[in-house]
Amino acid sequence: MSIFEYNGSALVAMVGKNCFAIASDRRLGVNLQTVATDFQRIFKIHDKLYIGLSGLATDAQTMYQRLVFRHKLYQLREERDMKPQTFASLVSALLYEKRFGPYFCQPVIAGLGDDDVPFICTMDCLGAKELAKDFVVSGTASESLYGACESMYKPNMEPEELFETISQALLSSVDRDCLSGWGGHVLLVTPTEVQERTLKGRMD
Image (cartoon, rainbow, N blue to C red):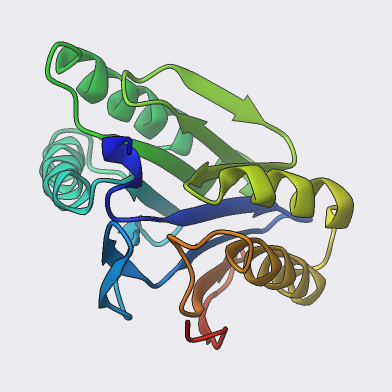
């Protein structure tokens, strides 16, 4: 079993009309044994920028702490919040500098940039970025997430429809992966507000 599958995870970010949603499952496991059912994988960097970290849970938490530290330094120096594109480059550089003993994480970054244009991207554990205009996925359930998102996604969705789409894609995908699941956690970000919702899924 790969080290990326040790704790199990499912992450997806999706773009709508001047908004985006990012969702994860809530299971923390050790191989096939479930340890916790309320595990947080999506972290806030600032009001319009979020990062989801799939992979090894301990590395995800360590990496988040280092990213918060770097972002606070940036805020002190520049007196503004980091743009999503800049933050993606920061995450990529942080991963690449540890390439000989990498963080076993595959990040999903989602944010609203200039003029509230949504930006999403994902990368591997060495920091190779993959940009997308529609959706990005990561984690042990990524294969079934690709299928669900490909069939459900459509461009320029309004916030409420985007929430419904990403929720259905996540719930149907984690049912096909025994290492992730136990409900979901969805963040819907628009230029004016952030909605945080918890999904109930199959509890097995």
